Image 1 (cartoon, rainbow, N blue to C red):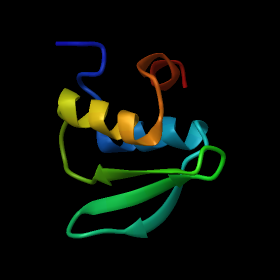
Image 2 (tube, rainbow, N blue to C red):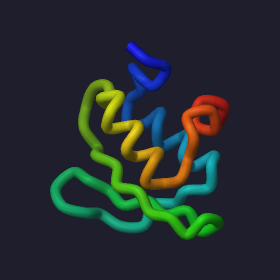
Image 3 (tube, helix red, strand yellow):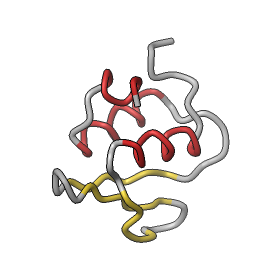
Image 4 (cartoon, helix red, strand yellow):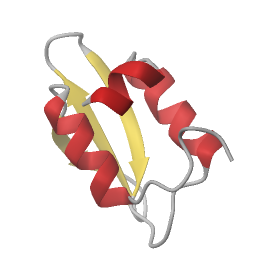
Length: 74
């Protein structure tokens, strides 16, 4: 298990809000599109119960231009 394991949807959203992301729109099914006006980048976040898989969280951060260190310190 890496440093990004064990985060739930609500924890991820809370940290992304601290980093400047805002809810943009609902996507297909249980997915949401979030936007950071500062960087101009979008990221797609699945709203599923339980822990987010570490690879999925890494992809969310990569899409949004957020480093692991930024995310963990937010």
